[in-house]
Image (cartoon, rainbow, N blue to C red):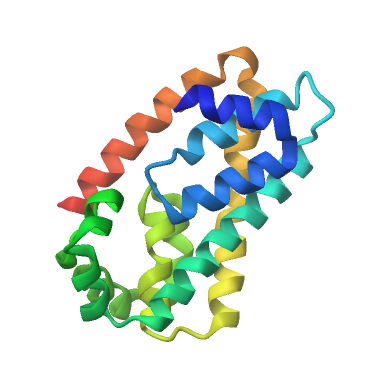
Length: 187
């Protein structure tokens, strides 16, 4: 997966980053950590700039989040759960219970959930579904998504730039972070 991400960014620059991050939001198994840290690294040897990578990644993140928010608005938890019992659940690695738990959790935590979940791998994308299902006001959703996503993107792009050729080491540490967070979320 790393090679594909690197190739797309090297070929298409900002547009490649925007498209990859949009896809990453809709299909969480695509690693934003690789996209963003490598995006930061390429600013050290190409005409791409940190601000441009951050803007492209943020626009891509918001587009992906809006797609999932829209799906959430169209579907209630029960209907989405039935959909995930089939092929899509296997592709996305989700189950009906995951949706019901997310909706219940979201109803308790609302706005704070949208903001804070932007820093949690996989969950950062999926939080858009319960936000849509609960009919969270679109303006609040967008503001919290833009702020949280921008912070995540700035941090990872800057880490990639600072790490330079060693950007993959950052990805390894982020994989450990992801595992720890996912275990904590699971518990």
